[in-house]
Length: 288
Image (tube, rainbow, N blue to C red):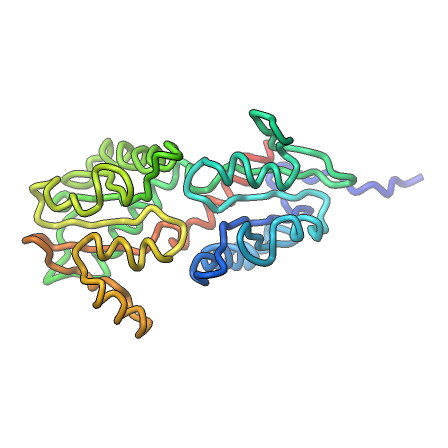
């Protein structure tokens, strides 16, 4: 008698799997969800998974609803977050049942009826995020040379993070990138700067002797912080930022001279196209 049980997929074969990319989301800022939809569309286009779905903590479609509707034998939940923290280690695992209330730790694999669920590590902590940062930094300078693009060893790289005393991992994720890039000796210097911790983003001008600066926001989306707050911290007037936002324009002109230095400012790392590959790497790790 022939078995009607579907054979297990080979390692690296996700044709029997659902991929659910999870973002924070926001009811006030539509740009917050954009990277999730961007990378989901790319991975859907590749045809690797049986289905690729989007889910959010703060907006529809919500995580629990999407999880219930995932139809495949296996489901991989991939949080598109920049660091480990409350959402990736507590809120989302609790929502999906990978963590129980009052437990200090959580699992990354569970059986739910006929399905097997896998919980991936956040994309932003993957070691290849260094490559994403470099792509952002080098790409914005190449796209906006003035009058010619300076060489990387003539530039100081600043990776701008949020930073918060409530979550030390927020700072650690940025500092890891800085240390890795320093060891590569690609740039004249590399530094971490923060919105809410020292050194502040506005301190970057006094932190280097280099005349050319490139600032990369270590955020998932091009939202409030990267499009408004950081340009203002770098010296752009609030009036100009508001005006350019109202006209659907970029809030920073590349390059802009500030305090005797030329400053290039890139888009957030979360919108870099090659981040789709980082998400896929996190899925491959979770399968092991």
